Image (cartoon, rainbow, N blue to C red; front, side, top):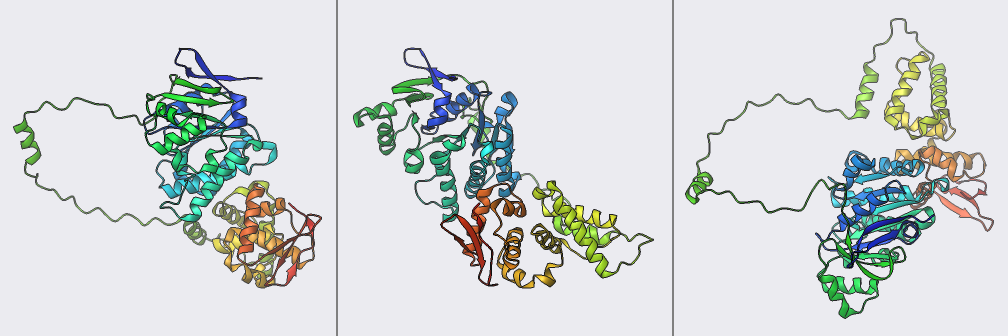
Length: 483
């Protein structure tokens, strides 16, 4: 089935349309100076193909959130969530085929790059059964795929550039069609721009940008002057989804508008010069100092608040002392029940800790001897199949894992248990369950990170079977199928 969306009209007034299926296969690059109409063009494309294909918009300025009112896009304010949350949202977006606008407004440049990288990696790492076709629109792409270093940390720049490269180079097989817009081609990484086969070039003035635009459009250098003369909202188009020869397009009207708009001239106030001078130089009014407000109560972090609530819970009148060994057994059973609950995999530790406290009271333990940090360690051990007290039986392994964040303790102990007991190396799927993710790509990056800390040594034989050695413990798993 061929679906064509009308983008505007050519110089003769004939409609110019874009083949949506061809666009999904060949990607699109839009270039133009600020004020040339790039955002208007992207909005026209999104509006015209709304309902035909899933749309995912990475929006640095929050201009596209207005699509939600007319077309039902889900607006996500990235500043209200963590990187891990954003990556989890991306996986759910692919699963449910929801059209989404990720607004990065309110974040600094480095925060925007981190968030965009996590989001794109989440889209890219989705399971194969969720590889549905989707347009991934990235406005101001030079921010996320810069041609050179900037003021952000090098590792942040590399992570963002890698995510954008994956989108444009490898995203097609996963159903992801990149549509990127930039103010300057010279500031956009060449390996990202080169993967697009369709181009819409708007007004630009710098010679280096005009030369690159002319090269992409297959024009001679002397013809590049035409790019400088383009009016606002006019673009030169070329590509298999639009036209086989460069064609001038005036982009059509849109039904929604951005929250911000270009400045408009308004009449100046008609005040006499003497009156205006009097207003500007008038003496300051007497200052009134308001009474000092009462000090605001100190906000307690959620983890400390949960622990404080747990400690302040009054003991029931008929509370009966429980033998320590029996209490330990009850705690182990409660942790086992939490781990066996499939919904617990993706819940935060603080939420699970509240559930743990309630379950403990239900089995007669009013004050379980675990604070939040101790609970996280025991939960990680339980997810790895270690239901006893890890501090007693696994002290050696826990000591080796001190260099890892708490959320990586579960995968480490799962491998350590397999190595200690001579079992096959856990699969990526098993490791993902202990790490609280469904992304196998994240698990592979996790293993790479643990190897960089010199805690794992991974070997894959010629048959593709993986085994892992923990050098500090001298333990090695049996080989198992990779992945």
